Length: 353
Image (cartoon, rainbow, N blue to C red; front, top):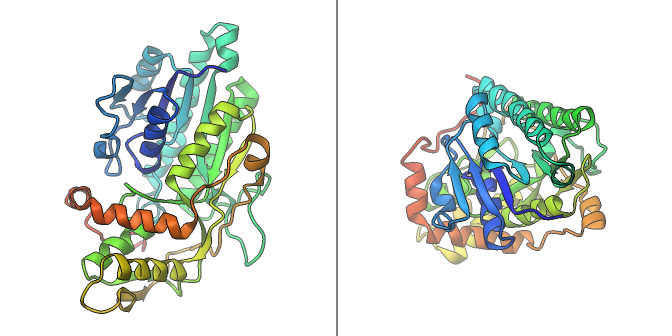
């Protein structure tokens, strides 16, 4: 299979930009980034490849069917990797309509454009076309203390965000089975790493600690997540694109379960080493706050299928990944200040008030 020309939606976001950088630097794909540049889309995230002749930005909203159709038909891609989404659970509690419109309607629009596109391909090109729908483990709901999500775990979303992603997964699967769009779905665990917008747990803790502010931990901090370094995720998407089987779903996990409070304490210890505050240990700033409504207790990914069938496994351990992440935030204060001076100032979201 020959892939040269790839559309990446949401390619200026956190995970999308990691995919864009990997596709250009390591896989030598020509990349067309379709992104409407919401608060979470940041062109600084792709500055490393922005001047590359085989990187192209298209400022298009996937909710705008007409503009999307024109753009996709002009590009004539060999593959589409769909990451554009509203992704923060707390924001979905505040503004669920945005998640319905982008994650469900936007995905429908993109699937329809892919269907229209491949209808005009010759049989050989159509056989090689691929559509990856990038989703989340949150569609499976909440686990107890034991077990892991597999590709056959029933869906049981509990937040407006996860419900919107579950809906988009079902659309993607239906467009494969009904219309023959060669879709593959990936469900990943919690990502972390450089360039993450500072509304998610790890960058919130790093940024608040550096500012000497309290480190908010929801509830008792015992909620558990599996943590996936973003560059490992980008590699996994590339492997699925090249070696995955249309119609299949692949879980992508980091083999790194950790409770929120243990994770926060690990960040504090690394900051004590890498950037001592002079005001005592960072752990003293931890503050337990009101829990998120409907907060799922535990997520854990069984990634044995992607390891066994197409040869991907995470390279980064949680300790080394956290160290790299903290060092990046310490060394990129201009990026952090530019982000925080814009649409987000660190305020708490998702209390439904």
